[in-house]
Length: 195
Image 1 (cartoon, rainbow, N blue to C red):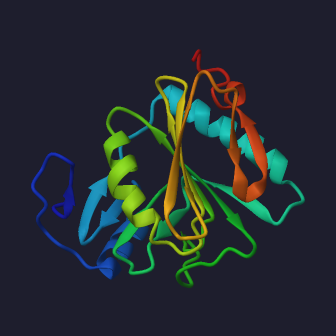
Image 2 (tube, rainbow, N blue to C red):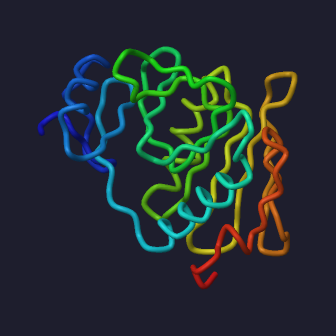
């Protein structure tokens, strides 16, 4: 596809959000969209998938019977201006999920987004994606979980709309997700990874 670019390539072939969605809905692979440019997503390594599975299991069990739910990486999110479409590794939505259109495949009201960092994605997750995620009015927390060591960066939106950051390293035993009032143990996040 000539409209897909990787991070090292010059960014040409601008397409509209409507063109992106039509292409994406017909594609067997996932792509993200940023200001008119499409980026192909690569596959994830074992530790990444183990962490994701642990998150879905533990957060999902905790939220059973509550008004929030955890969604996997297949659920796309969009920024309010429709200038970005992204696939978070996990997200939590509280209350009724709000969807962009009648295709029911793009969430517009996540409260918490979780990305699992790898060598190839950490700069994008910490910079570009966060720039777009924090434009979503419902967003309250953003967690970036390292897949190579026990380290999490948490960003929380405060009442003054500014974001406060917290580094959680292996010396800590847990991370607290304020939105759902859940303490997630690092041992559970990194279960089976050897980290």
